[in-house]
Image (tube, rainbow, N blue to C red):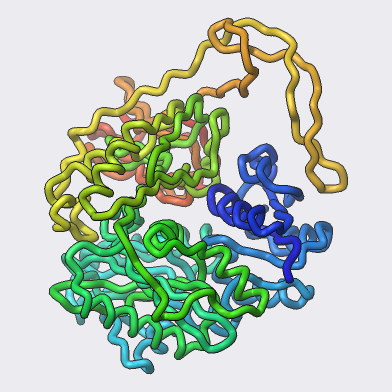
Length: 582
C-alpha cells in the first residue's frame, strides 16, 4: 500500500491530490521551481524538493530533476496531476523503472489514446464515430490547405499530444494556414514538450460533452456521467457543469456506453475522460484525456465520489469502490475556472501579485485554488488561479448559488475572469441551456465589462516581525522562522503579510509618440514586421507568449515602423517598449 506520494505538478491540482493523501494518511511530497519556492502547493505539502529552473521546461518538464526528487524523497508513488507529464508514456515508464507506482493509466494506453491520431483510429475500431479529420501528423502547412479545400473551412489544427485547448488553432482560409500551424506547434512544444499536430473539421455550433470513466485492474470499467464544457474562449474551457442541460437519458447512456467501449478497446486503467462533440442530437468522438481532468470536481459533487482516492485505490491494486449499477448521480454542479485574465481586454493574461483574496463559503460551495493572498501568479505557468464549484438540487438553483458565490469572491492585484463568469451565469442563453463552444465569443458582448482596477497597497513603515522563510538543504525544502524588518501596508500594525509587488499591466499600451509597449510580462516568440514596413491600425506586430498562451500585440494606429526594440526569444516586462511607429 502506498505510503508516500510525490505530486509532479504545481498549483491547485497538486494541493487537490495532497488533500486526499492527507485524508488517507499518506505523506505528500511537492516539487517546485525556483519561482515556486514559496508557492501554496509547497507550503501545503508534508515535504518538498527543489527542481531548479524557472520555466516549465527547466523544472516541471525536467525528467532528470523529477526522478532525482523521487529518489531523494523515497516516494513509493507518483501522481502527475494534469498537464506537464500527465500524458507522457516515456515518463510513466521511467517512474515505473524506479520501482515507484505510477498513479495513472498504463504507458501503452497513454500512447494509444494520448496520441490524438491513434486515439481516432482506436475509436473507429470500437465503432465510435470521430469528428472528420486526419489520421496522420501534419507535414507542413500545405497539408492544412489541402484538408481545408477538401472538407471546407474553417479547420482546426490540434496538438497530437495535448489537450485543454493548448496547441489548438482555428484556420479560416488558406492564407492563415502557415501562421496557424506554426503557432499551434509552438504552443504544443511549450506546454507538452511535443509539437506534432493533426487536423479536424471545425464544427460550427457544437456542444463539448465529455464522459468521465474510471477503470481498475480487475476488469471493471465504469462511466460516472457527463460534463458540459461548452463555454469556452480561445478553445479553452471557462465553465463546466454536470449533468449537461437538455441531454436526454437515452443519449447520455449511449455516450457513456461508447466511452466504456473506447476505454476497454485500449486496455485502459485508472481515471480518464472521453471527449465528444454533440450537435443536432448526434455525438462524435473527439479525443481521450488519459488523466484526471481540471473539471473532475463537478463529477465528484454529483456522484459523491473522491476521484483521487479512486485513483490511489486502483494504483494499490484494489477494485473500484462502485460498480455501474451503484453509480448514483444527484443534483447539479457547476464549476467556474477563475483565471488570471482580463475579459474586458479579450481575456488578455494578467500575471502579478494577489494583494487581497476573500473566498466564498456556505452550503454547496467548494474552492480549489493554487494561490493564496500575497502569492505571485507568474507569466511562466498556466493562469488558473482557482476553481469555484457549487452543487444544488437542480440546475437553476446551482446557477443562482454560483452567482452568489461569485459575488463573495474577491481577488485584488490581478485581473481575473470573475466578471465574465458573472455575465455568463446571468445570461438568458446560459440559463436556458442554449450555448455552444462558439457562443461566448460570437454571441456575448464582453465590451459591457469594465476593467477592474487593482490598486497596490502603498508602502508604509518598517517594523520587526517574525517571518517564516523557505530554505533549502541538499535540495530539500524546510521552513525556518526568523525576525526581520517588514513593510506594513498603510503604516498599520497587525499580522504580518507578504508585501505585494506591483502587478503587470493587462492591456496593450500605445502612446501618443507612437511607441507600442508590452501589455504584460512575456517572451517574444515571433516578429511579424520589420523596420520600414507600412502598417495599418490593428495590424499584428509581434507575438508575445505569456502563461502558455500566444498573444498578438497590434498597432494602435497606422504608420511606418521606425524601430523594433526587441528580438525573438527575448523576455520583456510590462511597459517595455517593443515597437516605435511614426
